[in-house]
Length: 391
Image 1: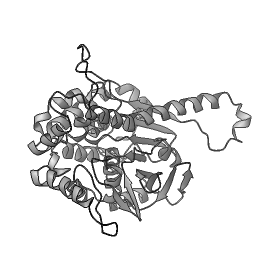
Image 2: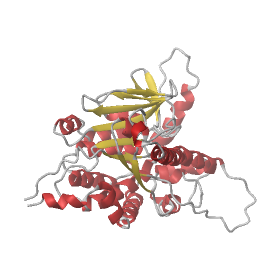
Image 3: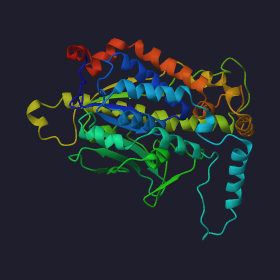
Image 4: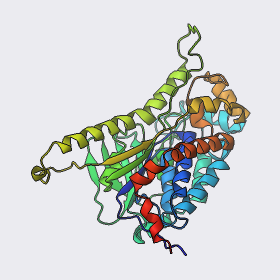
């Protein structure tokens, strides 16, 4: 028999970034980590922080914090059985009707009730979240000591601030910094819808009289929520991938298309701020080493944070092109009108390709990337002692 192990005192945090369908890669990494932990042990990350699609993955883990392996298996099953129509409307009426309604809404009077406008309608995602997430389990796992805190970050279009909605132990206090803050709440599907609302692609979500969109937009410090929630060791699964240009060896006289530029902007939103924040944390750690021990007690707001980041070893965009025709025809026609086809360099395709075959390949890639660093991950998370709890 194996005793359940509680990692809640470890101060380990898991930070998952955004990226739409690319978040399937995170599940592969988590699946590998689950191999390092006995079957019915608790989550090795008592602090969870997620943004965009990463917020959905972290919340799913938070719901099953008492048994990490079970949570990862459920998450993997969902991603491996995913269809684009479960995330946004993909039929002709749903795709082009939604765009038509948005165009007609622009002619409405200012006093009329207007719905948020977007390229795609992701109402099916709300139904999926409500069917697979049991948000009540988060409080139970916090009370039982399997989870310390969980944060979901969204961007307020009303104020321009990055808001981290968090659920935590009673001792955790809200915080406020320049352009970002933490607000205690009971998480629900609307917070996840808001955090994962990719700009212009999915509609904004109204919470407490403010309109919110993808959490990566105004998130200048993606590590901040985890640190404010008490993290001392942060494990990051990123989406900063090696870029492979399809036309690198060709003499291409044409300028980048609007779709290519839009893809670059999304890449910048989802990856660049994380890299900058990690560099800033390394500099702070180095600075703290130079301060004498006798004076460190007088320093407020700064502490040494260890970090481990794992990024994809292959280009998601190149992989996505192999599954272009898995997308429903109306979606392909819409993308085609924006200059995105089966030979396009735009990364937008990899964000919107919520098809099981593409997701399964990203999960496989994440698993392999993590297994190649098995010993480093075990060392960082201090997973070796776990076997001592078996009897």
